[in-house]
Length: 71
Image (cartoon, rainbow, N blue to C red; front, side, top):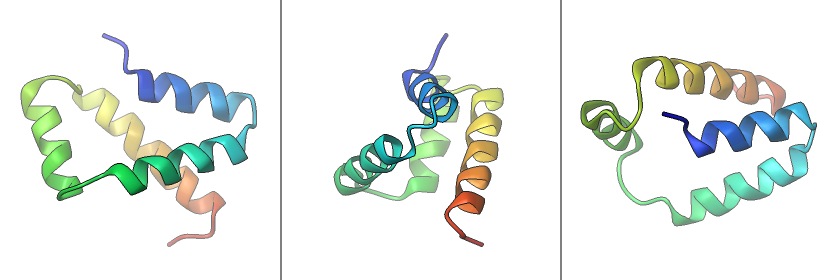
């Protein structure tokens, strides 16, 4: 089972398309509603996201946060 978000982020990072990634993240951020932790837990519980996909997303988020100067 392949996750299109991970595929897209991976392609953008490999292609060094940071501005496109930032734009897509801003669009996602504007559309997102609800508690992020609860949403992620529901995805894990439903099997739509595997534990390894979750771990990969956490790692990517930490790297991204480091790139933009977050804590």
